[in-house]
Image (cartoon, rainbow over all chains, first blue to last red; front, side):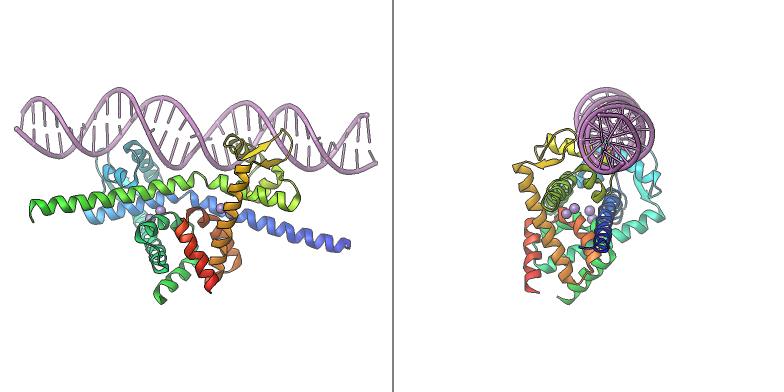
Length: 150
Length: 150
DNA sequence: GCAAAAAGTTAGCTTCGGCTAATAATCATC
DNA sequence: GATGATTATTAGCCGAAGCTAACTTTTTGC
Ligand SMILES: [Mn+2]
Ligand SMILES: [Mn+2]
Ligand SMILES: [Mn+2]
Ligand SMILES: [Mn+2]
């Protein structure tokens, strides 16, 4: 093996390592918005179904305690996704509504895809709730196309 | 609407809420092992390819700093997945090897599935890295069957 | 309209997983 | 074998996201 070969294979290896690191960095990035996405999606749904989104309902549906909801809502408000007044229910901002719509869209595509693969509804719902945060636009498009075709 | 109807629909609603909460609880549960899974999978790979797993290599491949790796390795050791000696490279325990094997298996099935759907390799690798932690056994089986068939 | 229940908030604790800065150990090279 | 570079560790900071306990506000039912 010549020196040139060594250089080349080192560079190729370096690129592979770099690209892998970027994948992990991307996944960590996605992880950071998971909770916010689930909350706004749920809040939009509660508003649609009940006319309002109350912390107590968010808590039971998310399976967490009320103080956890309160703290998370604080972050969502700080990030401009919701507005709220003390002891009152929660509203989505324009930005929050946009995110909620996008999330609901993604959620439905992933869910329909899993169902069309033949998965039972319970498991499909469970898996979709986790997977939805980690599908790229491209993957989403392929999922949608597959469900439509089948 | 009779009282009985009300009772029934309330109970049905309660079950739906309960089941949704369980989905979220399950996803949070899965989230708690994501980092450990990625680390043991990578450690196994490094040992296989280089004969040893050194923190510096873990750090570059994970895209994090060395102190982050050190702290995470501390947790993995505490949880019985690895053994290590100060300033030396890392070894998997029996349990760690078992987990690594399972993770590699899952990773490959998810990756092959995405590729067989027609996704480009770069995006497939990226998405697989996130999705792998959120596929149930059932979904995994469906993914594997689909890749094989196509 | 008051009392009790329900809902919401606040304070304070924990773990995880990231970071920087500083220090310590190991390794490579001469 | 000294020394400079690389690698590893430690200390300490931060924010996210969970919890319990205690308190306040609102709602409900009589
Ligand atoms: Mn979700
Ligand atoms: Mn969702
Ligand atoms: Mn992964
Ligand atoms: Mn993986």
